[in-house]
Image (cartoon, helix red, strand yellow):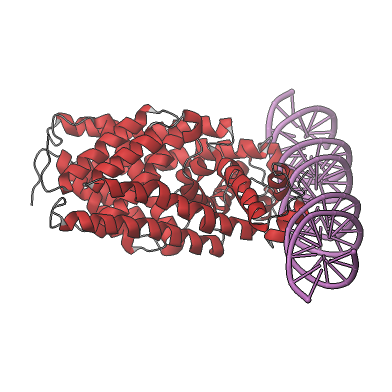
Length: 204
Length: 204
DNA sequence: TTGACAACATACTATTCAGTATGTTGTCAT
DNA sequence: ATGACAACATACTGAATAGTATGTTGTCAA
């Protein structure tokens, strides 16, 4: 077995397995041995690719989580005339329709922020960049919607972008803590109500 | 030194030190030895009071965090005619005026929810109870405000209570991740705007 | 085709950690 | 005052863990 040697493929395998493990048990709750065991590789391969466990964590943020944010929360908005509709729709699809077991794991980004930001500067910097990426991209989309008259002319898109990202993390956190899928609909309703107050005119 | 033996005092000392340590480094990031070292006691005392590290964690939720929720976010609302004003004021006082170093630590409850809920059932149950306590108490306060005509008659107080608690956790999480105190004002503004939409009439 | 290096595998180490075993001492009822 | 037990202190253990040292093998340029 495993004759083929492919640097990039191996790295991706490690990252993929590590992501799931860290997502499930937290960064501090996962050992390098845990990750290696779920891989077709060994410890030697791991430390050939990542000088330390922390470096793996950093790579998870940069190479897995950041693209995931764009993929899940930004790109899909392009097909909506009103981005607020897109945001609500994506939330319903990606959060509202998740299984309770999956919701229990929360949001990969938020998990790492809560766990690692206060205790490691390297994580803090990278997670901060990832969060700001999310906010910036949301802001850009909102700015477009404002220009095209969908949003009221007096709304501060930066403020709203902050609030939207905060809401995503908050909803993930609540569902993770409460273990009650019905709460999603409740939170969704309130967010929808908020969105209506910043649109130029609500339609029926 | 330490001649006086006081079961209750000792327990409180352990809980107090453990709270700060867990708050700062996460539950998995703190060792029993770490906690003991910051105490005037030894490991023997620790295991005399708590059969296992997990039991200490449970006690932190039940005996420290739950009272703290009531103290910080529920009791102060009693002195406001409009509880929404009280909530905004408390947020400004307890979050908006915090130092960046303190904000970096986040919310004790939210931290534990994000870290421990998915990986331990005992934590999950207790954290769920704590969260529901917060929501229930908020709901009760909102119900009163609705009856006295401060809130619109068609608002679902349970939904709003969920949203308010979610917002607290979300704001804590964002400030923890972004390390930018100005974001508080931004989020505060949006929340205020939302509150205005559920009040009977906004005053100037 | 071969040697040289990259891409791994294997075996080991020092440390840390939760928990235990056992010893000591303060306190209190009688 | 004194035993008896609760409230601790001290010393230890086995398992887990991040990281290392060193070996093996695939691959590719010349």
